[in-house]
Image (cartoon, rainbow, N blue to C red; front, side, top):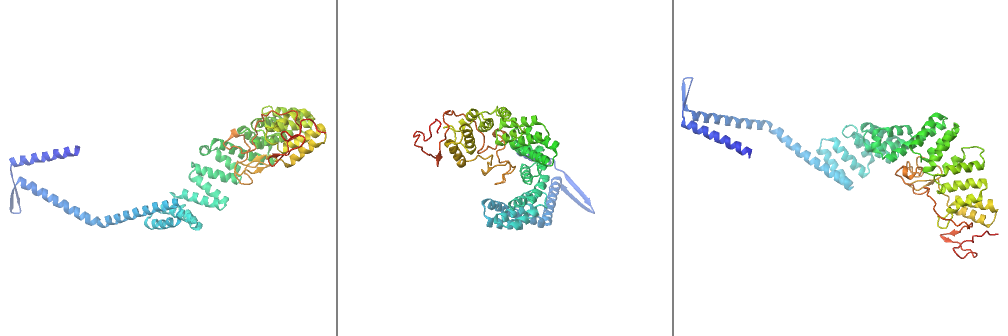
Length: 482
């Protein structure tokens, strides 16, 4: 609307000017070289405008003729570029669809049409990778390292190849280079951390976890557990080389960071015992037991004091389990200490909930303790033999279980010895992180035992072995036999 108004105003002004000139005619005389030219003012103005228009047309024609070849080349280049990007798009679509033949064909076409190696190298590398041509894939990814725009993508592709081939050393070097290129990338931080811990470079892994970018890339729970494991391994190395002060400092940091980390508490107790700090050792084991009762904690707790009487050990065990008295491991620890002192009723009270009717079938450890209890209180008889038989056939609970492959292990390690996954063993309490133990997690026992029963039910293949002396519930009567 504004343009129309301006055009209307211009036309109106010109029309008014033409009308004024028509009402006020004049003559223009030009004398030059003996010639005399006379013309009206309107004719002079019209002639001048005609010359200007003709000059403009001639100039535009000359400019078009001079730039014509360049314009034609630009048009052909634009068409070539358009067809090249079309081939690139179709090639990436073929890669996403898993069609290696089409991807390779479009990659060749894109390389021929586009003079942009960063773009075509990526498609060519993916097409070669899809077709299984590892040599070509490596060549294309290596060529991508020469361009700053594609260096990061090339590093990632080469890292993936190295990990697939099992070349962890080469993958680690590439990941460090990628981290220098993009230190804020969550993917790079995750990959570099995994490779550092795989190579047991615990100091490097800890330094990486301390950087702000790592705290944003890794979940808080996982970062805290990983930092604990990295420091634990450094503390263990310090203890192995008898650098006790360094080992004690690192072990204390681990325990403060994750009190439920069982190996960390055990290591701190061992180092503190070596340095004569028995109170520190006992406090660490009790704090960890309050979060995550575990057989390794009880074993370390027993070994703290040498030549200790059974009565003193029982009192210390009572302090240990005071926060978790109804948990399975607490009952086993109390029963073990009570059996050593000959307190049969105390041991039986601790074990009865573990063999009650509504409790899970007792494992080998519980059966062994029951056999020791019956033998210590009543001597060798049929009941003892039954418990020992059940102990031989029962499942012995694993100290550590992998949440990934469910392997059952007796010794804790940072990596599962079966699947090599990092931080997969149930060494932390469930509320300490986001990995939940599949089995082996201690649970409270809330059953109501039958105080009269002392002979176990014998289960074979899921069915109770019936004894003629007790037709109800397929078990022996409650009174003592023999």
